[in-house]
Amino acid sequence: MSDRVVMTAEAQKALQDELEQLETVARKEIAERIKTAREWGDLKENSEYHDAKNDQAHLETKILRIREQLLNADVREVTTSTDVVGFGSKVEVEDAKSGKTLSYTLVSPSEAAPAEGKLSMDSPVGKALSGAKVGETVKLETPRGVKELKIVAIG
Image (tube, rainbow, N blue to C red):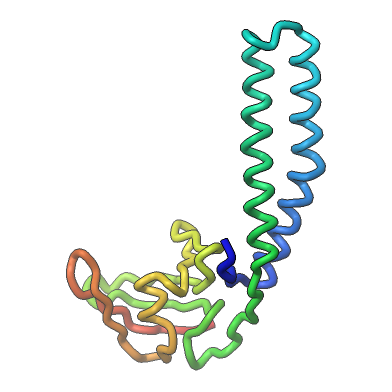
């Protein structure tokens, strides 16, 4: 993975903190589990040993992925404009069809968490909202047809 990973400084810090925890606390815990399981003898039929080794492999893979993300991090400033939607903007929109008000924060693909209202700038909604201004209505194609969202506020 040599592609740049766009993220906020906040996301970079969160990844650094997670990496530190994995490299120190989690590694020690798994090493201790492996050591204890080895002391029980026969490794062929020692499920605790095999489980711990499997967990160790998953941990090391996760550590490598995070290191790679940090190595390829393209840290971007969050847009502070309340006039135009951009990276990091908190946007309140109104669904033209239902009248329902929704709130989104536009983030990088690596930070996206739709259930938390964090949408990727690369998502269809993110692309439609990007560059829009308060009062404008954006249209986007969805599997269920065209969706119209009116920009109510940008924070």
